[in-house]
Length: 122
Image 1 (cartoon, rainbow, N blue to C red):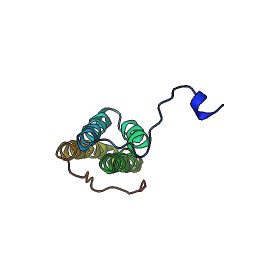
Image 2 (cartoon, rainbow, N blue to C red; image 1 turned 45 degrees about the vertical axis):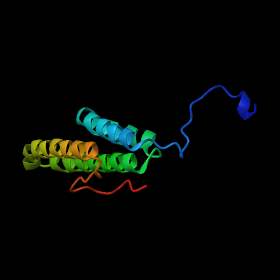
Image 3 (spheres, rainbow, N blue to C red; image 1 turned 30 degrees about the vertical axis):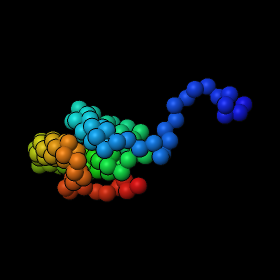
């Protein structure tokens, strides 16, 4: 079967970048969804949108790295009794950082989560 005979399947062309406004909107949506789906939203956003523009790639990569860092911190804190009492502080800090990232995305600025393990770099 040749390419012309294949069924109509939408494939993202890596050169098919989104406009700056679209990238800002999608970055904002990924950050908002990460409040409700902490690891899943940035992961799906990164996998689907990373080739659509540098701005959206940076925001989804930063959000994914931050969520991985929060998960690792939560697991490490859950091991100890004192850590169990401090997990709420980590979750509150994560919500604040996500809101700051939402504002940055809306203003067209790069996402800056601190502290973050940079495990996803490409």
